[in-house]
Length: 460
Image (cartoon, rainbow, N blue to C red; front, side, top):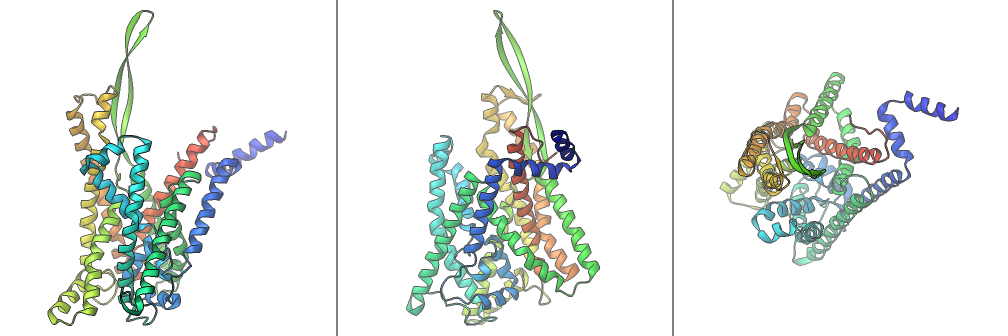
């Protein structure tokens, strides 16, 4: 009787809630979820520990008045706003990962390591960690210089002036070692989440930082001058963006594949064939093109901002003012919002990097060669090089859709800023893309765990 009542109660629940209930009921899955949550709590704890010789309250005021700093703050998970020991976030590690990915096809030694399996991948991971350390020092010093220049006009005395000589040498070196240690600690936490928790650890760290900043973003929204109907329209627009991101993240182009094999039965050889497919993702580059594009576009803006405050040559100051007016994300024409040149360049770079990264990854996979070794072929296409050329043509066509979508995601904040005059939302769509991607990946891992125990999953 109790069992029948339990089954009836389970059948009455919505499918998604039932899947969540089943996941929590499993001890090992519950342990992984609790472990992931505990690691996120530790991450948020160290994100509130500021480096020495810094006034977090004055920095908070400076961030509220400078949108360029908000772009840097995104990938630090909100830690840069307090200039904490985790202010670099996992961004140096992501940069090292991108560099190693691009260097692998160029160096035969790295390519050989990748083909060695688990041991070779672990070796590449070790090289990537080594590369992360100098990148932390370089990006950390650049961040300190840029931040000090940015807050000088709005919050003088909020932090020291970075220098390797004089009285500021010790605070600068201490800050760089603290920020490097914070980044490597976050990378270690991310690896622990990947091994013992749910989801990709580094992505979960970025996800946790973005979600932690959402209450402050909502507070700015409701305290702004926008009307109720404007807020409602923004809510509808956000839902549509999330639906579009989910659709494009899950969209694939399936290329049919047939496998021919010989089976020996009863003294005779029989020819059998099986059918499968190669799923090519429409947006196989993920958020990498956005990171590339924003990093490159911000570079001339940050250099111009630094030169403008330090140079006394009139023509150099004129050039830097022009760069800031045309390309700055926070000082566009009219004195507020983002300049059109910034997001036009971002759109073009996102499209370009989408193709570049997708083709680099495709070359590393050697799909046509591996397919031929396994005895598979695409119907109507000869194995080997013709198959590779066919897959490449299909990949280029579908990548246009993914690249244009990412470009539109990048410029939506500019349109929102113009329509609603809310400059605080200039990076929300990039954050949405990261959040939705991490949520989908985590749900798929939970679904795989449930399917191993004969439960229905989340995704249908």
